[in-house]
Image (cartoon, rainbow, N blue to C red; front, top):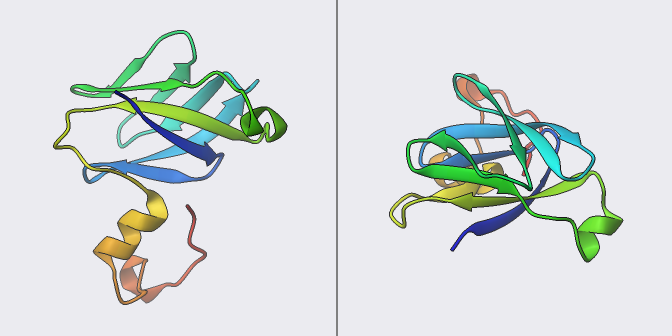
Length: 111
């Protein structure tokens, strides 16, 4: 079963310790993800492998997603032992004292 996560352009998520961000949304059924070494076009028609054994696709807009075209529903399939977290949750776990940015910079947190 896939994990469904709603994100918008600029938001990030982690698969294990690997960071991805939503770089661009296209017509609600496609998105461009920036990964550590490449960009990935993900669609509602086919899952894209972004890491070994980790596949991402776009959920077909329905319900509130139709009313929020700036958001995309990503469907992420990964082995059970792989943690998948929104960027803000990952950063809270990694930097629990609020210092979310290396070097002490406290820029705006993103989901």
